[in-house]
Each structure stands twice: as C-alpha cells, then as structure tokens.
Picture 1 (tube, rainbow, N blue to C red):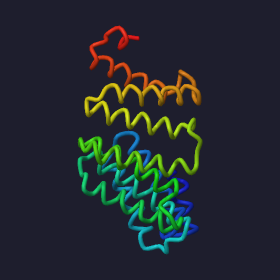
Picture 2 (picture 1 turned 45 degrees about the vertical axis):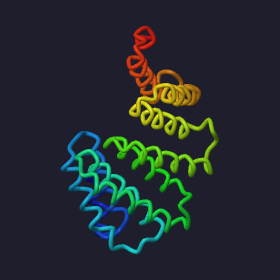
Picture 3 (picture 1 turned 90 degrees about the horizontal axis):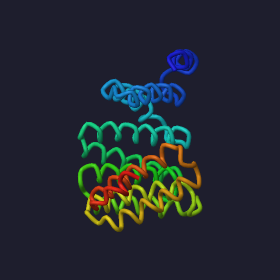
Length: 212
C-alpha cells in the first residue's frame, strides 16, 4: 500500500480518489489490527483530501466508504454522536449518488447504525435500522442470500438484549440455516451464530443444548 500511495501521489497528486483510496486502505489495516488512533489519522488524511472534491460517483462511493470507516472508529471509542453524524452523512451522500435511498450503500449505513445503537442499548433504534437495512436489500437479493442471514442474526441480538429469547432463537435459527446453506458449517459466519445460540441456551438454563 505504501508503494501504491507513493506512485499515486507522484502521478496524480493528493486530490484524487486513487490517493484517497490508498490512505483509506492504510487506515483499514491499522483499524483491523487494533491501532485505532493511527487508523483515524489515515482516515482523516483521506477525508481532508476528498471532502472538497466534486462528488461524482467514483469520489462519492469512496467518500461513503470512508465515512463509514470513520464512524466505526467513533463507535469503538464511544464517540457515538460523531458516529451517528458520519453514518448519516454517508447515507445522505449515497442517496444523492443513486437518486434514491434504495441502494446498497445506504443499506450498509443502516446496518452499521443498527449495530451502533445495539452497542449503546438503544434496542428500538437498532431494530428500526436493521429493518430499514433489509427493506432495501430485498430489492437486490433473494431471501436465501447471506444478507438475510446477517439481518436475522442482528435482530436475534436485539431480542436477546430485550430478554425475548424465543424471538431471538427464531431469528438465530433462520440465520444459521442461511449461513449453513451458503457457506457450510466451517465458516466464521456460521460459527458466530452457533455461538450466539449457545449463549442463548445458557440464558434459558438449558445447559445440554448450550454445550451442543
């Protein structure tokens, strides 16, 4: 990435989407390895470059992705007002690019906002965001698509937080079936929902099922 960044700056300068993308990628590498401040520094460099560019589709999509990345950092560092602001900006720009809120980029923003709301215990807002996510995704994928699995798993988390374990188990079971059919049993997504079901059975005092 460093070599790509040097080449991009040499040939295109700072104010272009290719250089911005390099800084975003460096931010994501640091983000994924737990270096949150370093990640935010790279994201901020990218944002300072791209925010003044004319928001055509290429620059706009890159900006939406960058804003979601920055919002993720803000969520993980308990800066929830800033996270909500940046997710909202990302969604608004997505709508302006595609001419409608019915687009995958906006859907991803709602998914991320739902996770943020769940993180802070705002279950009603979380459920509303997840429902907006799937309402958009219905336009782009079939009911057996992994995106539906993601939706059911997140809704299962909401109901688990509310203590409605029957509804939670129903959603986790739907997510498990979708992930199993698409990825098999030895996949991270499938394993994650199996773990959630196990934890749920502990809440239900069914230790045998939890161990299974």
